[in-house]
Image (cartoon, rainbow, N blue to C red; front, side):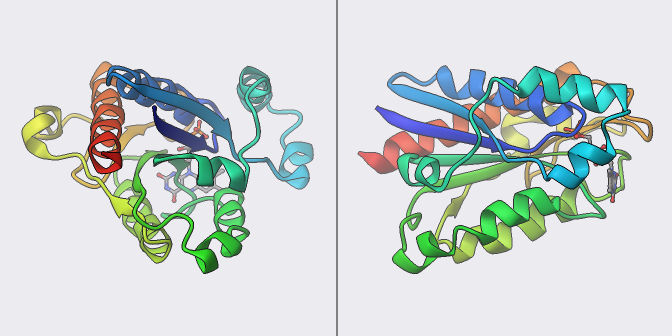
Length: 206
Ligand SMILES: Cc1cc2nc3c(=O)[nH]c(=O)nc-3n(C[C@H](O)[C@H](O)[C@H](O)COP(=O)(O)O)c2cc1C
């Protein structure tokens, strides 16, 4: 079996929804096992947001998912990270998880595995692309092999509509108040990303 891990952080549920689409696409590849895991929330954030319905609902919806561990990263042949933009780059919760995996970096445990990202931002130009690109930097330090989302397979990217999608990552636009939901085209691109990473992971695994 080729193993695909989807670790995500999602405060308001947009990335969680995208994660399910990515998983669906990966599962389309024969002989692939998919595991979705959530990156742990900080207690300070949980406490500070306890009065926000949208946050509380989104957290309730994901509480049954296992919390991401470093063993999950070792288990996987392909890792697809779900990341909502924070000031144009990844949230501290995700960075903390990645930074705490230094032991895996030292041992080269992730070298040669396949990777990619899917992103959510509040606004179209609020940092979807910078979040993907800045995330690629630590992923390359781990020796992961980054797979993108080419135009040829994703004609939806060639639009001036306010949707996600770029050669760097699948993505969605949550809207300034978070009230948008991922567009069908965003979900389609997320599925293709899952399928692409799963196919490449399977081929490299041999
Ligand atoms: C502290 C903070 C910083 C944010 N920074 C940005 C930003 O730089 N650009 C942007 O477009 N959206 C920004 N957002 C909006 C989030 O990206 C948005 O809420 C998120 O993509 C929704 O995904 P989720 O529902 O999976 O959490 C920020 C949100 C928070 C809470």
